[in-house]
Image (cartoon, rainbow, N blue to C red; front, side, top):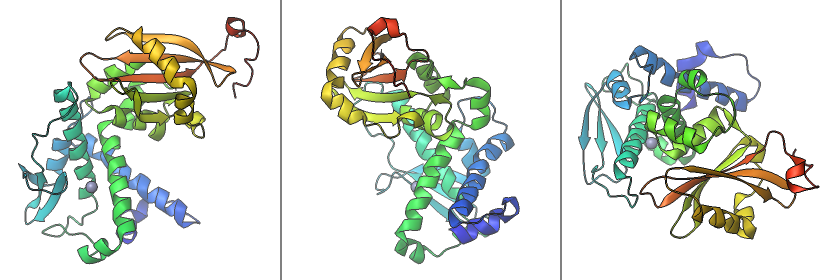
Length: 305
Ligand SMILES: [Zn+2]
């Protein structure tokens, strides 16, 4: 995988000293393909369409195939590629089926789009520069390609050029703003928060979580860098759950509730909760306060590192 990417992108590379640096540069060059493809297909506004990208990469057919083991499979042929998708009539336990389905399908399509860049498309049919046998033997590289394709999907569906223009850097403005962005971009919560908290580091000082309201269990947690070494689960199990449950029952549908809670015994944070209509899950966030108001909760409010 690296040999091929190296050949492909060597003209873009800066000098490097370690393999890690080289890998990071190759990955960046690869992820840049997402923005280039959006520009070359004239896409500047969301929702960004993975099908337009697939067409530009010579995916000439997208077909359903029920018996597929994986969710999607790219098959090269003389004309480019056919993309097979596993039957698109899966059912989801979420009431918000349509939107969730759309965002999931879009993620799958954008992920598969990422795979097309690993092929040598000057060949007919396009071929993987490493034989499929050695790819199968080399699990590590295969796995790495999978991760890179997930990163590619986010870079394509939530492109940096759009984020730079439309999302303000700083603390998480509100979960309602996040929901509006999610709807506008037609992406899942996972894509949105990974992209904004992890990849682009646009929103800081927060932990966002999804909570199953029937079991009161956290489903997914996204932490901004400042909370990297802090365990949400420990906090949740030692009192956090109780604090959230109390506020949750006071939260109406489709309105965001923000309260200050004592956090880790000595800090105060904003707890935000958003319950969207007809959903069995809620989205919550813990946000550090920019300027803690010591007078609000007495002493012991230092230590906001
Ligand atoms: Zn894949």
